[in-house]
Image 1 (cartoon, helix red, strand yellow):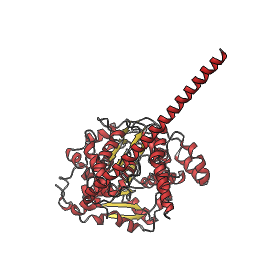
Image 2: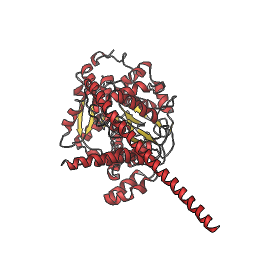
Image 3: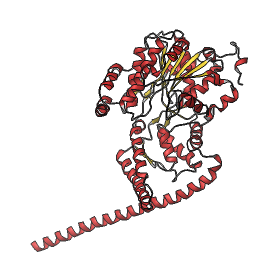
Image 4: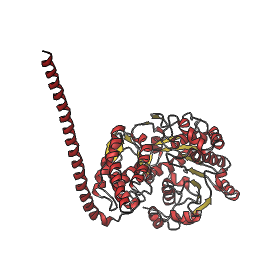
Length: 523
């Protein structure tokens, strides 16, 4: 039962609701995937919250107010609008940019935030794996330092949570809930990127990264220590979520608004474009639902505020899929995606849903030639002949670049410790465990994956459910042609193999005949 704010008394509030009652929360990254769900959940489940300040920058010709209005047009806010119709007056937008000094804030807005804010969620980051090092440092490292500096001036601050990633220290195969020495200090890295031009930085990026797979993980590792060093004596916590994908159940099932990480591979396969992936099917897929992730994030701020900084370092919470259970493997992830993707295919797909995975890079490269490059070359040639612009080879170049930067995470399994996160779950009251559910102990992956794939069809492909029967018929036709092509290629390969073996055997027989003839002559 939902209780509206006017009826909610302190006695009726849960401990977490009591913590957020009358508080003023500052959120960076509120326009992003995780940020939207965080805003929605706070407003709906903590109805006595006073104010949410959102840091938003102008983008693509839209000012901050237009971008704010666009946020609330999203389907995930429909339930909030029904349950809390007066929520809008609690949202205040401040114009800024985490990649700029002082977060790009005006002096008045900065003074307002310092004076009023009591809880901070620093969510903003560039999540592109192949981001230029200069920009990745500006937003992930420098932006974190600016947030911590501003927090130090906040007199009413109860809790500040820096949202990192479970893969911030992915060069370690065992990742504990503790800080790891950074590969370089944040200050030295900022000085380096400020001194060198972009071309020179691009040249030395591989050297800087060392055993880190990309600029995202590299800068996040440094940013964690930047938060710790610049957040001394602050009520600070570090939240490390794994790969965040669609909602599980609230506010709606299967909602997602991006194709980052593993979602990109599933969407590409569902579109009929990606037919092979470089994946180790036995490795664990550390994917987590965004609604459960946000529930855990909200709880960490409450826990940090109650912790009174008893530890020497800020607490770290690894939020991952593997609790008592072994989690989902990439093989299971792809099998579920194929099963449910075939059952409810997109009407927009250009080919049937197939996905041949292999852990072997050489075999994967061969499969990309057969399943991606050759078909793209044939179709692009047809487009060129008919006077149209070729586009498939260019598209596959982007797809293969995406596959190259994500394969690292599907080829390894990490041992994540999560004692702090599990202890936090145990601290929650029964009411808070229900309202802010985030336990992954007995998670139903099959049901979740079905919702996930249905959500991709609805929110990414924008397909109406009424088109499912037509899409199935279309997919069946594609499947027939696909099998004809595959079996024809297999038959041709067998024929060539047979001819090659026959040729080799004939050479051997010829050589034997010549040898016998030579021996006869000698005798």
